[in-house]
Length: 505
Image (tube, rainbow, N blue to C red):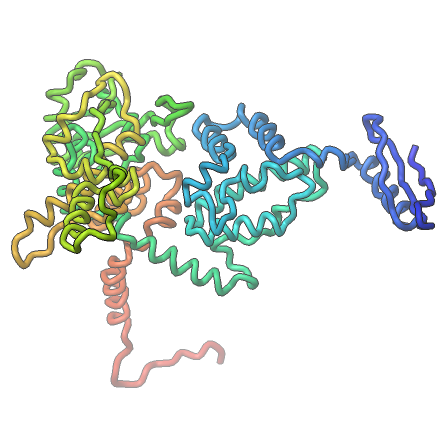
């Protein structure tokens, strides 16, 4: 039974304590300065009970980290394994040491990842301003708008779960302004964001030319040179091309379009192990036709594939690599001359040596640069293949892809004819750019959006146009010429009097 108790505090101040029982029989109370406020609160509690919306303030003290774990556990049965793993990674705790060591995890000393930002906060202490400030930090740190939205939606869903489970009365993540929102309050920022997105659509690091693909493939050790070429000319997602098996390559003839790849699986790393999964969407299960050149390369590659007669064997193998010994700067021995007292010539020579050893680069970049100094044959000699296990994208990118990009640029500069611009690859290009490249090459070849959408495994052609519509701008000239020709036919006579037929007598 709900009631109000009047209490006198020290100093003569009077307070009113509203007391009630929850639907589970737990005793609750809240103190107010006036009896009117206490009565209003009890009225709200009664109405909540009447409509089945009773809220327990004590449950709002649950930490966000605990709520996140319960939310993720509730969704485990309904989420794809890859989505579950992605959410778990986004919500994983980050140590203070890691945030100090990795600048990308913070912005101006403030955390960017979800757990350091909200994990230790009780749910009922998280405000709208807290969530908005976190989103603003993500944007200011240079994160892509899509990455910001993906992180935000996880936080919002957790807080929405807290509302549904009666731990919060309202979701503090509602009405948070996200990058790209075109609201009046952020109209100026939205315009800038739209301009940035437009520039990113034309970013050369997303679209390679056919010549750049050839240079990159030539700088990549076998058999991953075949991998790079095939992905650029089929547009498969990274997980899809890694998930190809020997039996997914089909031959019907020698001509273009008479051979194809069947995309039926995708590989993702879950709990540290590569796992074969269903593709991203229903539309992802598809047959992708091959050009005559790509078909010929795959035919030659399969001719020497150790598991040619095993249709379930991975098309492209996993690998291990001989560790690369990276030179490191040694500490100065006691009694030696400090660098500041060395002659300029000796200092310059030391700088050249450090540059040659890539010692001024971060460790990851130093390894890629050192591997890029090897020839393609030397890089291939370091690899041992596992023809029975799938390729791991993270290992491929670090050990094969990043060095190949740098190697392609080095070879391009060294072999360019005098006075000719060398063919190079954008330094920041990623394996996913091969998929974008396929779309760009297809559009340039005149392939219609609907056909491109099906071959890329999009759910609908609208998705294809949302991403690649700008690639079709050039077709407007022919369209407008045809439309203009119709206007010429319909031009009225320049002499004589047109006959007018009255509509009414």
